[in-house]
Length: 290
Image (cartoon, rainbow, N blue to C red; front, side, top):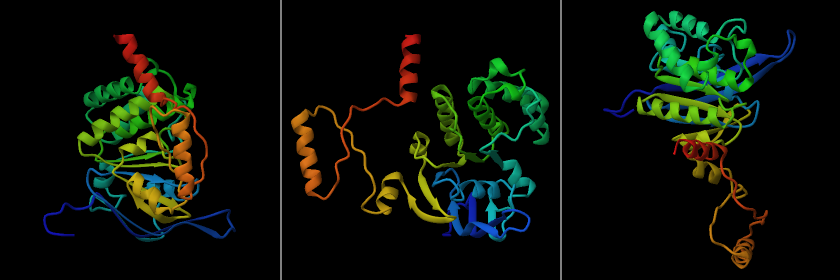
């Protein structure tokens, strides 16, 4: 690292992590000598099919899993150190919180574990529950929450202590458009605070448009990385590309198809563009308030 450059927020070198399938089963290697460095304030998206190692990497960064080999540093410290844990917020794929506890009480308990002052914790919890649309169920038990409500709650819990490193594992699974919009707003604020974000998904969702870099994982290896456009290009000339046009009549579409096929492309069809659900929600909300 050159003089004057800030230290990495996350530095992973030669990371190996394996699991044993069954008591007598052979170990399954989930991560094969992974190398990855994140700059402070960088938003990084992990993409790849199920079982590619995304969740395993996040669990290692959150100190829930230990590496078999290699080194991992979070702001220069071991992920299991007090300083790294206090700087990290983690939203796992499945809610880990007791279902018989009330939403507000879980956040209060988490705040005490994080050594937050009680009054500040209660104010922060109330603010986040309002932001993710759960203020009306703050006194209800998590067992009565839908999957989408639990995703919103887990994100609020991860943000409770205003971490410097935010780890989100499939945060949009089960979310409706209002929940998606709430997460976008919270991520915008996190970026403004200089938070480093790692978000995983097996889909190139709208949230990945906010990422500075995408990292494609396949079978525990980094296949490619870069912004969305360069990542698609790096996967080969057969990568599927979607283009959007306005004002084309049938003759124009036919001409575009002819040129594309002359270039060796395969025409997959043309259909009217569909509005993004989040955009539809925003328009509806604006119409109601106008």
